[in-house]
Length: 113
Length: 118
Image (cartoon, rainbow over the protein chains, first blue to last red):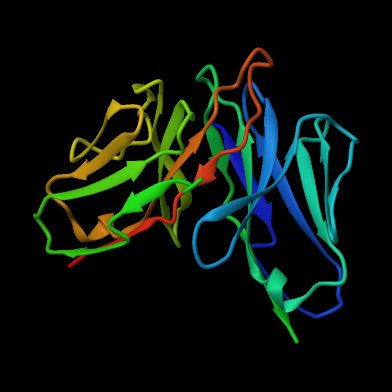
């Protein structure tokens, strides 16, 4: 069965800390891995990764994929209270031809002032 | 662009009643997805459509759930009869086709419908 596992499930840090969120997967016909941030409403897109070893960066956030070891990490440096959210990892793949995202459980990040 | 539009935003109903959730995808997107999110199970894909045709409904929990997409700008998710365990946030998302590269695209999520069944 295809699965995506995130760790830790929850994390509490203080402003200025650096955090690393993990996502491991076992998904047939892997095509891409995506990271989303979910605050109070809908998930919003952060990154899409398709190739190993190429870091994607957006401000204080960065992510990298290892297709050999089947995992990805999301780093957030100099955290701010506005980074508090649920971070979702999703993998596109599975038995259907295309289009299906399999989500992990999410990591709930709380950044304290 | 208005983004993905869902209605209603909140729905409270009694067990046994029929519930209909609605979604309008982003214009030009040819994939539409219905998800359910709960604390226990996280975000689960229920069903998705490509060009209005259901492609994968393996996530639909049981016969009480049905989804339709009569045209490119409208989809419904219906629960009949509803049960308390259906209480969740239901998201609709849409995306463009995958193109020649054969995959890898971004899904845009609607604001969700929070369903409470008492």
